[in-house]
Length: 418
Image (cartoon, rainbow, N blue to C red; front, side, top):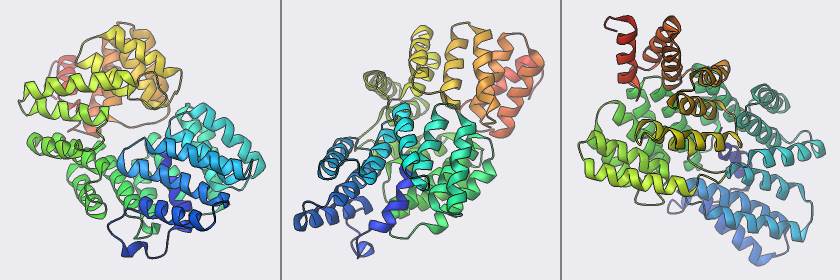
């Protein structure tokens, strides 16, 4: 679940006048500028530092530059010096902890704030995200429902509910909630608009609707030009369409500023499929180096690194080591899936099946998840179960990144073309 989207709830209330008239600055930059101006006139106003912290977190999402988190920490510290224990600063700190993927700490602090102010909608959202990341989906559902009960139809509740519905396999419901949030998002919130459109595009791509996904992503890039998240997602659409040169172009554009291990991995895959092996090798090496540097941090790319070690570098032991490390921090569907895949690569099929079944029990519908389940059951000699999962993978998304492997496995399992 991406908690940054919840900040729209606060952003609308502190958006500076004339925001729509200054297109050269992003929404977060406008807020940062407005708050700095306010602090010059009233430097002891602690609320300004709370607003500044939220704006820095938003700016980090706008750019992909995580150095803004340090400025957010400093703003929160300044606020608490001026007024210790003020609720807004502590709420902003939970927001920041979630952005850094410190889910256990975030949940503990959010629960304390919830006891202090049970009707604070954002706190319920932070609890929902923390619970989901820790694999506590029933508690996440309860927290999300409180958001809607307290204020029916609010944007944070729609966004939280959309992400949970996606995890539960309710793709249509997730798309509906994202669309409702989009309808309520103010026009001047250009990055927020692009973020929601990108999430809709991701939903559509992962369910095999690449043409519709591309249309949503083009809208996102029109709303917030060169948005790195939209460029990444559109590149994945182009790869699904076998338009690898287009994917390369998009990812090269994206990686000009603040590249991440994920964007490097996507670029490596695009180069590889464009018959540019030297560029692919260089980018794979860069991805591995940078991802390993962050592997011990809470905010990391371990799920991608695990897949890389299983499928590309063929280092199953290292994949399993990293998977076990990640399981110490979170137990969501995707972490369970990555752990199962690492166990499978190491020949620990029974334990792999136990973990993949935990992931499937959440209800998630995903081609890669189904493929992994099929491969694991196939290794265990469960032929009927394997065929069922492989068929589900292909039916759910016939253009997924695992579709070719799923087709081969299905043919080998059934002895006929699929």
